[in-house]
Length: 314
Image (cartoon, rainbow, N blue to C red; front, side):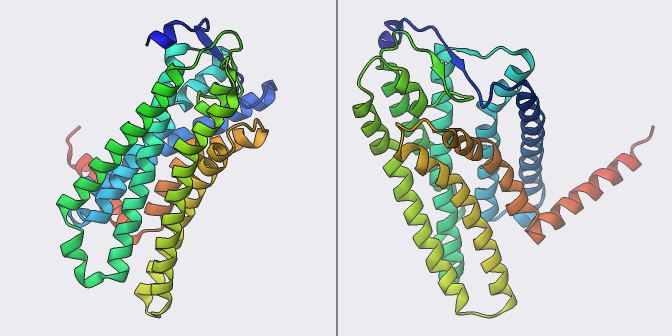
């Protein structure tokens, strides 16, 4: 923390998405609704998968972990942004800013690896179904989840160490609603060109490479499905297409923001909203509402809950 202590900046001002009071109230209502739906929807997925033995499979184990990460990703900055709209207090301490950078990269890094694990699971299930049980075991799933968190921590720590070495000597207005390196490092009192190259190498290229790998795996899966015409194949095609939509909406903004970190356009703010607020809500919509097994399990859970309430004496 020595480098941080040398900084003359003790807090940053989060400029948010707009200076208009009417737009701020609109964002407050929309983001509050999205946040509540995200937390409730993903919590329902976690509870449903844990409660129903029929969902105790590798795919749903990975889905449960994705729900937990999505809730965390939605919570690292959104509650503060919602509170800021109410109170008008837009500042964040230096340590608070570094903390946001840490958790943002922890959850996004972990989700990137987990999405790759989920695509690997679908690839084996569809392209090598006879070997699925021997390849995707419970131990392998746990290892994939642990590996995703370890990689997330390592990536996050590299970003935090980098941020703590930056000297901040004056400008403290962050042109976003949360702290992230592409906007924070532009406030540092050093040449931002070299810093931009670091951002491209450590985040942009990693995100782009993972996206290309995922794209290739889904193309292989979809081509394999196309050679079959059964109802199960069409269901698998629909499922994989939905999964790819989530992957594209998560990776697209990340790749754009971190491959061109020196840009300060309004589009960057809009894209950051996508992967921190909109993408986490897609998980319950695409993975649950489109999945008959999950919907069936949710109905059973609801009926069980209602019946237990009726049986409880008043």
